[in-house]
Every structure is written in C-alpha cells, then in structure tokens.
Length: 160
Image (spheres, rainbow, N blue to C red):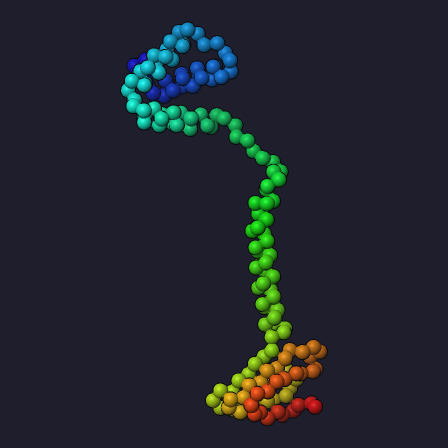
C-alpha cells in the first residue's frame, strides 16, 4: 500500500465502491486491501482530516452522479411572476405620469419680476403683469381654451 500514490489508491477505492454499490462481490483479498488502506489512512489523520477527506471524496464523486433536472416545472413561471408584475407596474406608472404631464396637466405661467409674454396655441398672446399667474387647461377639442388667471394680464387676439 505504501508504494502507491494517492491517485491510484483513490481510483482503486472508487472501483471497489462502484462494485459494492452495483452488488458485485468483492473478493476477500480486495476487502483485506481496503481495510488495510482504511487503517493506514485513519492512523495518519485526525478527526478533522477525516471529515475533510470524506467531504473531498463526496465532492469528487458528485460529478459521477446524475442530477435531477425539472422540465416544465410548475414553479418555473412563479419564479419570474413578481419580476414581470413589477416591470408592468413600473411601465404603467411611468406611462401614466408621462401621459398626465403631456395631455392633462395644465400649463402654468408665472410672471415673477417683470411683464411676461405668453403665446398660446390658438394664436392669442397674453401679457402677464408682475405677480400674475395664468393656468391654461389642455382641453379637447383644441380650438377651445380654458384659462384661469390670478392677478392682472392683457389678452391680445382672443376669440370670445
């Protein structure tokens, strides 16, 4: 046993283990060699080394064992369900904010220091005096305009 290197011993033990698992008969000589090897190894190792060695052997054997794969597993969709739902909610939120700001939120104009001219989409011009605030609703159809004024202003070119 002492003249064999570690890889040869590991291969030999694996072959014996494979034969034992497949219910093949192990000869008395092989059993004796296996016991001698076990005694020899356990004598050189303490309990921590034995546990590490067992873990290393199991890790080496793991590649020989087939792993179970799930095809069309029922939890496959559930895994991504919450991620998909979060993305959809995010898209609706961003789209709703964008739509509100673009189509529904009124345009607000404020003249803070001096007079400010505001050109509306219907062609009219509004001159806001200092401190005035003009809110223009985005109304449909586009030929009507609803405005709210706080303060003083002059309207030019308005259709009444």
